[in-house]
Length: 409
Image (cartoon, rainbow, N blue to C red; front, side, top):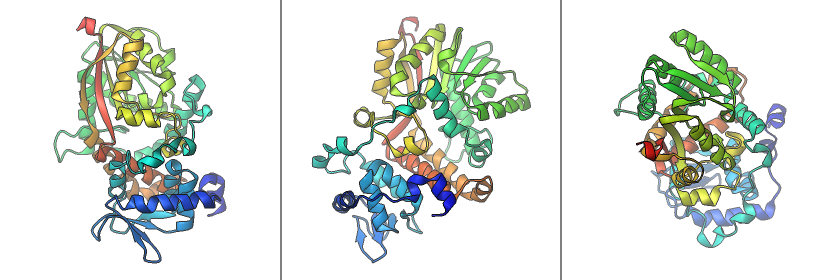
């Protein structure tokens, strides 16, 4: 590792010294691999796994370091080992295609007798990542304020950073993102004159589309970087949008429609009651809500809700994916709202993520020139492929959820 990488990535530059845990990880992975249709290949010619010559290949480049990281903390160590180059996909293997068989078996990949020991190896969510008023701002800035230029290198021209909704097999990404946005606005009943609140501005694509419909749009964000570019985009589009740099808990007023795209994942379980109660408070009589939310099965949510993972450490601090049941329970206990319509875009998200990763890799030279190093590249590549595999396998999903007051329907 270079000195620059050591300073920037201390958890990657230094391999954990946990010989007993490393041996345990090796002892667990070898029989586990027999049930996964992949090939784990080692430099000495050893091959593990249930795959054949046509199966995805995972190359273990530095076995000692790989098993040390895996033993020190499997949920974080696996991704860190990829960032460090301890393992990689084979030359003829796409990274997401390699990760998908693991995602399909996520709930059972660890032998049942060993699952009871999860409590001893899972790290707890760090207190400093709580999504308080101060914490939320720090967590959002950690990801979304990386660089507008970075995101521009892999997003479509609309700068939309959420699942697209493809109307046809050959629809391009920008058109699919507009289709997604129209789906949300239609679900919330946004037309000319609608008083619309958007929680989480992104770079302004939805606000622009809503304003072009004639809606009176208010949008809020905690990201200064996003706010600056969104304001420029509003001016270029010739629309009037009230953009406010503020937390959702600080909003006042009444709105006919409220929309929020893939923002609930950043709220944190502790604050879901506050989030939905705030939406309920701000929604005018007869109003509708449309939320696009990444979800996971309820039993997986219950099993992982308190544990700290690679995504939370490196990509989305403070993040937590809910289940549909958890959303329903929170609405029932803390609001007058209920889910009255839903549609899944899970496979569309897998397709979206693959296109983002392809663009990211194709434009890596430009991204590198912006000051991002090779460890960042591997981190971002793993993040995009890891998420794609999760959606493709159905381990996670994403829904557009309409919420309204049943008494007003």
